Image 1 (cartoon, helix red, strand yellow):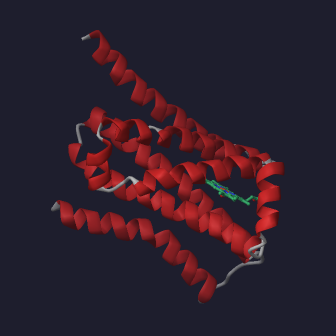
Image 2 (cartoon, helix red, strand yellow):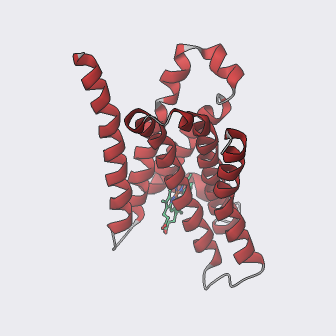
Image 3 (cartoon, helix red, strand yellow):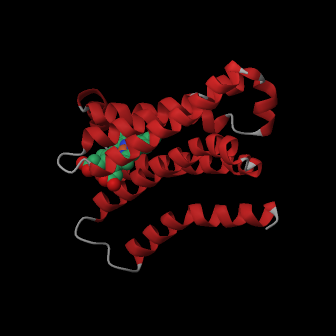
Length: 194
Ligand code: HEM
């Protein structure tokens, strides 16, 4: 498949969860607690897309799929898109745009502190994702974008912290994150020796 077509396919696939959620809310059965459902779905897709973005480099190195790099920016920007939807649905739908309560939550509820920090750290990455910014920042760009590992870690911690009973899903994301870190570390060590 030509790369342009593959990019359109990935673009549509990444948008699909948001479209399905909007369809479910507007036309289907919104369920007993629609706000909770929206916050959960957008949060889960943020974390999935963050981990997918981080999987690009190890997959490229291990499987030799060099073309994958052409999708990394789109995946990262989609992670930011879902994180912003998630944040906006919490602030506007859950808290009713009550900013003061948001500030109280950020200070008093550690899982909100961690989630909010992850979202804040995503902002400079999204703003510097253009080719022009890449050229302008030079080697600093790569250093700045290494923040994506810290962001994913904060995302995993946020999820682990907020879950009260069944830890299976957040632990699965934590395991994927650990594997991705390991995959990133190992080829470097092998390269160091050669
Ligand atoms: C990169 C940033 C973030 C990531 C990766 C993330 C991820 C997640 C995930 C995976 C969930 C659980 C979804 C599920 O149950 O399936 C969640 C829930 C939630 N997140 Fe985030 N989140 C982020 C930022 C934020 C921010 C900025 C806020 C608000 C300031 C926030 C507030 C919440 C709330 C209120 C819940 C639901 C808590 C509950 O069930 O009681 N998150 N988030």
